[in-house]
Amino acid sequence: MTAIPSLAESLGVNRIVDGIAVTHPMGAPELSAVEEEIRRVQLFDLALDALKTSVDGPTVFNLDSSN
Image 1 (spheres, rainbow, N blue to C red):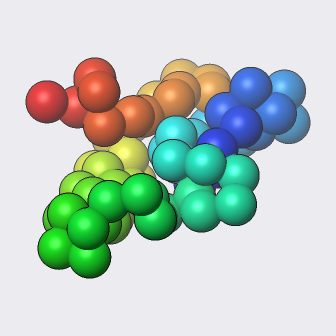
Image 2: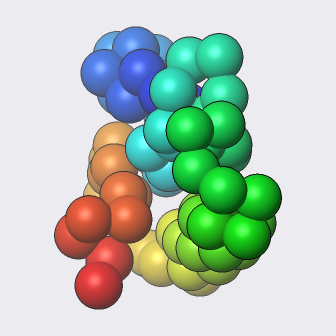
């Protein structure tokens, strides 16, 4: 999981989960505590789905395209 997917792609990482921000890859401090927890669970589930997905080369997974 990274907030800079282009860097991970350039390193040849196969499964890249797009995080929220460099300082908070799995957090969103501007959200309420409940909303932030929901976002973290969504990112965690996305990361698990990424691990289960067969890929051919670097692939970026993000919340916007997973719905």
